[in-house]
Image 1 (tube, rainbow, N blue to C red):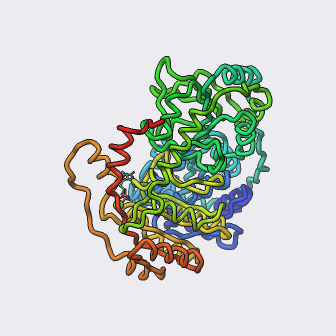
Image 2: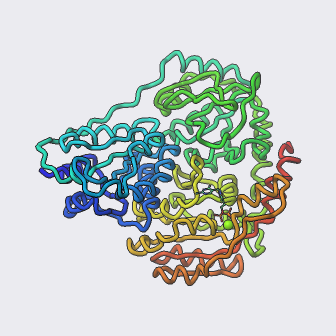
Image 3: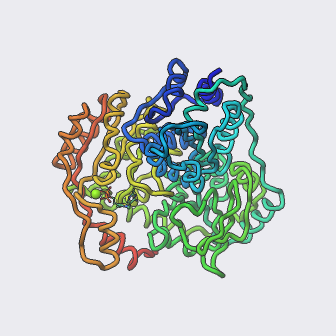
Length: 546
Ligand SMILES: Cc1ncc(C[n+]2csc(CCOP(=O)(O)OP(=O)(O)O)c2C)c(N)n1
Ligand SMILES: [Mg+2]
């Protein structure tokens, strides 16, 4: 068999259904082998978007998404997506071409050492030097990408190797069970929880990767312990739960930090330090139990006193079964904080000023979307408002990136979510800056016949950086730009463009767009005037009001 055929067979063997990317001439053997396979090629307009889509597929399924590019420039375009998958713990396999390695008449033309380039931002980075190695390399790459902590892997298939004959055969896909935590660490956790007077539960990124919600809800219901989450832990337990305090989108001084500051123990499930810290540890301060698939990375602001390492769901179940939490413990303080947080966060939910407040957008979207519908966010200052104010009812129904926090992933991640869940509504929320970083993918979305709503928050600026600039007391400088006419822009791709002029009109446009087919782009003027006064000023002065 030709090696490129074997590569396709090896990917099929792993259950791959999509490959996202842009082939170059160095991939032509592979492309030909793909023709007629069960794998669907999703052609994109930029490799970065292909990588973001593959990573999102990995994030949502737990199985690696696969992306493809040519050598040199195509491969370097995958770098940001590799970092996105690696930091965000999303399993992803990247496959690129390369010039012939045995004999080439092209000098160094387009040649970059991609294997070395990818090494620090992947879990595995190797070149295929013999077609016979393909079955083992692919099997191992997939295993490594999936294993906790998941991430990106990279395989380079040079042109001459792809064309070689090989008689190698595939390996069966053999999974492995995640080990459970040692009994002693469970006992220690139980003892620490029983000794605590003001414990809180924190749900972080790792808890969103595997099904842990059921075990966590049982733990909360049994003990009555209040909980909060990180941005990547949103939705693991339904945020309408009576014990839910909120999402820690900031590291300190937010309303819910009033509760966190008072806690004497944080039972920290699935958190890892790639996220912006949800709270800051201090020496001699509150204690932390780290429950995750791996031990805590120690950091100046994170040094848990106990690691419970093993399958999260099993650890939480075992702790819940054993713990005898004092039923008489007084949770009234946390109860009061919860009331206050809920009141504060919903303050502008009905405010109809236009341009629209991000808080109002959050409430309109939450009203119009069903439990299982998905919102994806790009990176901008609205992410903070969504993380704090939008309540998720199910895991992975708000796809945001609190790890690499790159701009440009919002639209591709929405496209991947819709491909995977055609029965759910998907809304992509972007800043005007982030949207323009991968807006060319509107063409891909239209070509794929995706039903998608894309909202662009228009402030003609890199608003997030403006907000930080103001917070640091600097003058407004260097962050404004002009936008294209987004309605015409959308139409030129075959999408439908909308430009509402009031909150009521936006609400009606959104509803219409959600209930009709095709790609809808809504250019929404946004009012960011409260970013500074609430997030920089009010929170510092008056976050703790209970
Ligand atoms: C690729 C990339 N470049 C730069 C940044 C730094 N950055 C973070 S948010 C932001 C501005 C985002 O602007 P926009 O998308 O318009 O959102 P807004 O905050 O204005 O709503 C910038 C430049 C980043 N996170 N990623
Ligand atoms: Mg902007």
